[in-house]
Length: 131
Image 1 (cartoon, rainbow, N blue to C red):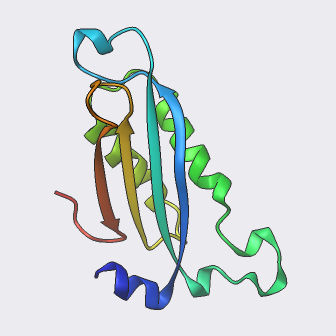
Image 2: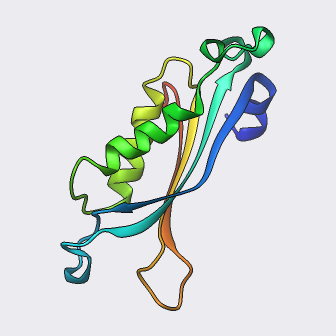
């Protein structure tokens, strides 16, 4: 299923440019001090699970849920690889029964002086096998 198919049946929620200091990396220069990382997340929630007609927070997936998952994962201790962190965040978000699919992008912002960022992105569907 691609994004166009998801958007026919799902509401897309997103978090953009969420920046946190994270203990991550395998290189010597990355050990012992946190690095600035940017997180961008898209959640696909079926319209049936996201009904704002009563204008009540309990009838939708709250954006705070996304931020809480990212903060919990990044506060859990040193992580060697962005791929690991990205996969863990995606899996945690998909544990919410109202989330059908997720796209998670992580980026280290200060690793190389000649790059804006280096990062990883994953897209996961509920029930699909992961590599």
